[in-house]
Length: 439
Image 1: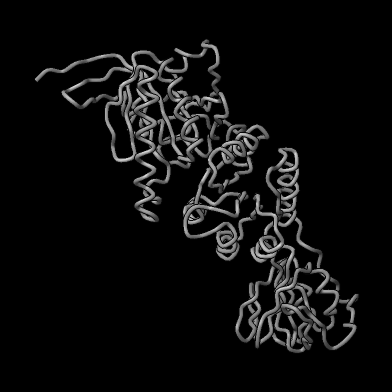
Image 2: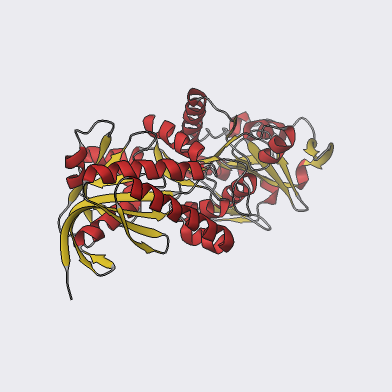
């Protein structure tokens, strides 16, 4: 049997999230793959490459010259973005062995490893490819650092194409892929990887999503991923929770952006900013129920988006680092009445203070819990706390105010009500103990 050894530039590509897409809508997944293969055959031929093999949604292409492979990859991503097909591409240079209709070689394995480190819309290069194209006009690259790839003997520097709307993933995102180990463990590198704000973009228009990702990357934010469906976004958040989510309202799949944001709020409390062309009142009212941190209309101005993100990041940090100061017992204030009126749908209803078990803060909202029901108010905790007074109610945690009369037990870390355990934080513990009639 004859073996043909040759030196080649190798492209490995695949569709990000293909398994999820197939599970959600098999017929649509088949249409996507057909379009994907059609683009690959057309573009690869235009750059005198060879489509060596398809592996399901994965594809292996070979080229005689690295420059042709890189320019083909740029053209492929331009087409895929226009078709909203989320594709990752990796390119390597090395020796391959051809046997009839199949090709083999370590260089192919490396290309596959490099590709798997990317995000939808990215093109990653090995050092050998970069050195071959670095001086070529119209090809701009950015170093991502030195990595030790799984099952690859020698560490190598990885580069990303940043030409024509392509963007570079962060080192932390590449590490989270589980296919590489970072070599640079200096304090500066570690600090940079751990302090960068990671943002997940949930957008079904891949061109818009790529633009958003580029704006974020240029501003120094990490793009954790570009995902077109709510279902895939929820899975991503469960696996690698971001610091912030930019969410479109109209998404592919069964869940729209508002339903997805509601589930994120209930499951993980990751902050969400809606970024959508749906600016009608009905959509806005629905969106409010998902407790977003902001609502931005498309088309958006990059400066407006970045300012909104900056304010949200500042708010997140304040919520983490700046708990409210406990009210001293000497400054107790009686309530103005034995009841309050709160909004319940389209009317105001009276709630007796004695019936309130506790109040829970949820971002800019508060949830009042009675034994019978709950009331969600678009009112900050401090406003509600002032209305309740501090004679019968006490702050136990930065997110909880409790009716003293509802407390049935306590230990070092919790107060126990009839149907709920309420956290007791160190910042408020002394004040709570002073307010309880202990023997």
